[in-house]
Amino acid sequence: MKLDILLGLQWGDEGKGKIVDVLTPAYDVIARFQGGPNAGHTLEFNGIKHVLHTIPSGIFHPNKINIIGNGVVIDPVVFQKEIESLEKIGVNPVENLLISKKAHLILPTHKWIDAMLEEQKGERKVGSTLKGIGPTYTDKAARVGFRICDILANDFLDRFERIYKTHTDLLIKNSFDPQEEIATVFNNWLNALQTLLRFKLIDSEYEVNYFLKEERKVLAEGAQGTLLDIDFGSYPFVTSSNTVAAGACTGLGVAPNQTGRIIGIVKAYCTRVGNGPFPTELFDETGELLRKQGHEFGSTTGRPRRCGWLDLVALKYAIMINGVTEMVLTKPDVMDNFDTIKICTAYQMGDKITTRFPTEIDEEIIPVYKEFRGWNQKLSVEKDYENLPQAFKEYVAFIEEATGVPIRIVSTGPDRSETIIRA
Ligand code: GDP
Ligand code: IMO
Ligand code: MG
Image 1 (tube, rainbow, N blue to C red):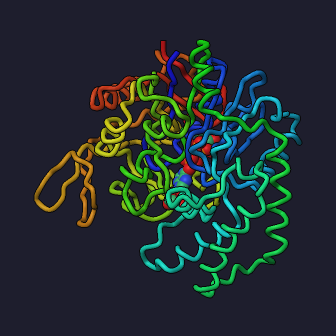
Image 2 (tube, rainbow, N blue to C red; image 1 turned 135 degrees about the vertical axis):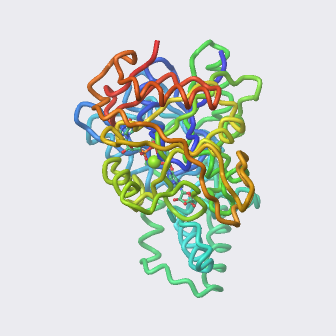
């Protein structure tokens, strides 16, 4: 059995959480492979809305295994809160959530360093979620990080004190004031480790490969999106992990020749939280309408998301990098009452037209748009793709033809039930 990978093809918040939840019945195992609590994956069903940050989105289905892989960074305090809120609604994750011993831990000092570095950047600020993601991955790459297996070690305190001292030296040198009671924050963090210790801490690469060998179906759940990837995103306005399909191999320990379907999630328009280039961003009332009707406010930070038209230049780039085999189109319903819908097919830069996604966007890009007539109908009332309005089907067909990738699922609302799976 091959590892299927589901990931975002834009700047995050494409609706990955909802689609993983919809697809979970067809899988035995759901595994997160990168990112950390910068992610906010929203699921809605039976009138409940739930936002997950670290825990895979398969957790609401009983008898399914969920894995937090080695590529993920975990904040024990956020994790504890997530577990508590699941237990409050009767979900018992202890039995079916497994955590890699190789996953790195976010310390409170990582968050402070995140804030300090962002502050120092001034105008060049990334717009980080300030969850400590960058500094934690920095420590991982610098080979000084603190992992889940360190909690289990006999010299746990020595290991902890080593990293703690390095961090505090740096913060003091920069006169950083965390504006929090340091002892309390660390006590809470150390207490939260107890919640992690309730779970099975495993060598997840062995587990995942064993499941695949035993013909069990495994789905890797991406966080963030391709354009936030540390290598291929709009650097430096990116996150600190590989969000692309290759990241699932390193983030779970699965060989590239063991990967199967690559399911790309694409929102019918674009959004971005934080700073960085966004060629099709709208600053007018249409952008405002997308934000309002799409409830485009960050699931993790509550910040308003920047909104704009669908960008095929960026989408085709994402499809190429990930080897996407099929797409899921989310949130077209947000444009149910639009008379005209636009899709960007190329960029005009100076007097040149290009369909390549540039490495650095240092001059003004004028998007070249193709216009579509709106469908002016409520999509979510339909359950059968064939009954959807003709104008909508033409819009879908255009995206499929332009990208060469089929759209297998159309999501027409936030609820689990508002999903059309095409024959
Ligand atoms: P993720 O980070 O990719 O999992 O996406 P988020 O959960 O951060 O953001 C997606 C938002 O859109 C959430 O509030 C979802 O409940 C909602 N959503 C997902 N799919 C659809 C859809 O097809 N239509 C509408 N209207 N909302 C959706
Ligand atoms: P999900 O999984 C949208 C953005 C931040 C910032 C940049 C770096 O819900 O799609 P970081 O906290 O990683 O240092 O922030 O990346 N960002 C996201 N934007 N969705 C996310 O996750 C994001 N995770 C990080 O806003 O611009
Ligand atoms: Mg999100």
